[in-house]
View 1 (tube, rainbow, N blue to C red):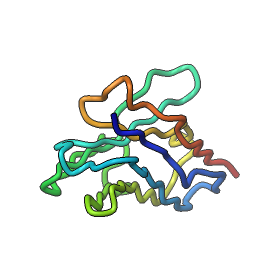
View 2: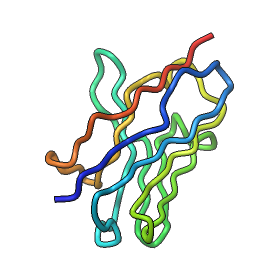
View 3: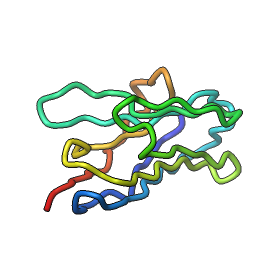
View 4: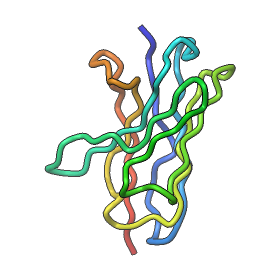
Length: 115
């Protein structure tokens, strides 16, 4: 089972940027769809963006035009570039396959957008 470790979160002011990374313990090339998810306090975990091994991407409406998902199969890593961050982007961000696999949930990385 591939283990996934998220990193790159932090505290940023509104309008700022962050780049999240998702490092896998094994190959991700066989995982067709991979995704970034987020969970805000008191809310359910939602899919933010997903990317196919072919490079096709799909974004949630709330982040389209601001976030960019990418993956490097050779490095077994996935990224989420987040620009023009808003307070409502505050959440714990997770990476996983899509559809998600319960055994692959990691600790996530906290993103806080606040002035």
